[in-house]
Image (cartoon, rainbow over all chains, first blue to last red):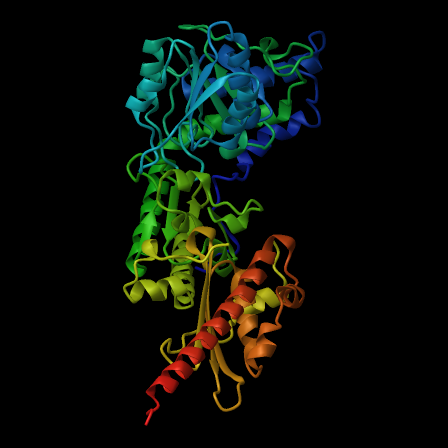
Length: 406
Length: 140
């Protein structure tokens, strides 16, 4: 069977909305268009009912109480609310926050902003496998530490952090624990009580729901987490997030969460099978390719590989009918390669040579075959014209060479 | 990012990929850039000793599509030029020919550097060959 082109293999960036989700959303644009805050007529009641149903569906997915779910515009807002909200609310208790160098920019840049306001932030390094060291975490905690924020799964390399262990440490030390769980929720089991998480950021569009809607889990018991709002107004969402609720988006988010809960086990087995097949196939046809980050502690649908001696953007150009992303600098205006891959210590050259594959609900074996075959051809062709490959084959150690930089 | 047609054309059909013998006294080799920066270009010229004209040029590039296209174009332009004419090639000529966007100008700069490095290597070789030839001449 011929595959349909272009192929989408960038499910970490975003996911298509599941048609079953769209179906649930549509009435809330047209017939049930009410404002969930309108308490005195049926239009408002219908909208509120939809929101509360979705709140329960999202809560069920992560083992939370519906009252612990605050709807937001997306995970970036959730991260901002969690970190800035805790920082302001617990300022008298302390001013120290612990995070990691491989966090998403929504966390890193929020922390940097707080540093300007007088907070102190520790950015934990990661080990070669992309995970933080628990000993380093423990050592970083002081009596001024108010928050630990460590992502559940990384958006580039899919590496899953030891969240339950971090949760236990945070609990023991009496420090709040926030996790950016965007890439993990709906894909792998995630239970806020098992993991001892106090705050968790989620996004609908990473789990087959619509863009523009997310949620923050805020623990209500053991301990009760208090947040200073970052958006002021009508006092929606228990005063933590003012603004008219995005009812169609939230209804869709709820349905998406329900579907993920039902299908997660089968879907993750299928996708990890496809992912391993892709990895094996690439390793069979090409030498000197390296998986970035832990293979063991990894999202089932993620693969991030560096193809030595070949630059990432030129690789993407050769597979322009496949949507993937690269850690190469040239794909962004910054001219800096992926800070996540650099943090693994693999060397900038390998960061420039990386491709992130994100499989998802509609990925097929035929697509994986097409991508693996095409990549093998393109990598071989580009290595033929790579001076680095030539030097390496001549036995030159590239790491000890003197390069002419400006 | 959208690539210009010319960049895509060079990427898909690069001209003069390959290597010339490094030890040949008539071959100049330039190797510029660094793997950490995401661009390395190797550019070689072979000069005809009788005419002083570049007979052949080859390249190998590790880098994005624009870097590959810049070096491919450079080898095309080098062939048939004298050494001095080759040194007159400017990175802006490459930018214009390939319609490179601002973020890719560094690719053209690297190509110009590679040309200069190759020619300078060639000149150095010629000089040392000339010196060696002088020393070898019998004095008596």
